[in-house]
Length: 151
Image (cartoon, rainbow, N blue to C red; front, side):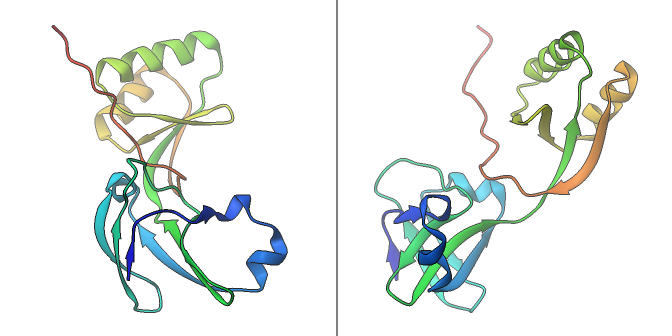
């Protein structure tokens, strides 16, 4: 089977539509969510080719295939993350500036900034006394670098 487009996302589906179908999952690293062409295997051993026609990142919960009885969805493996919890706007500005200078991609969930684990960032956070935790956590989308160069 070759998937060329995303059917929908499970967050856009009615609960009744979800529970009436058998669900297979494709587990991806968050870095694989940006790949438009890849070969994957479901948790039931079914091999699938993904070749998306539209330039779009995969997101956790994307439905790759669906019929009346079955569906195959994307799930994301946990990442080793630093969950940064600044106490003030100044702390947020300080760490955002420092991480921006390093061109590190970040995501935001509620009041937390999420970055992939890096021991140098961990040392920086300790040095700046900015609260953080290291944890394995699933993210819904890929950490994407923003194209930029210092001219």
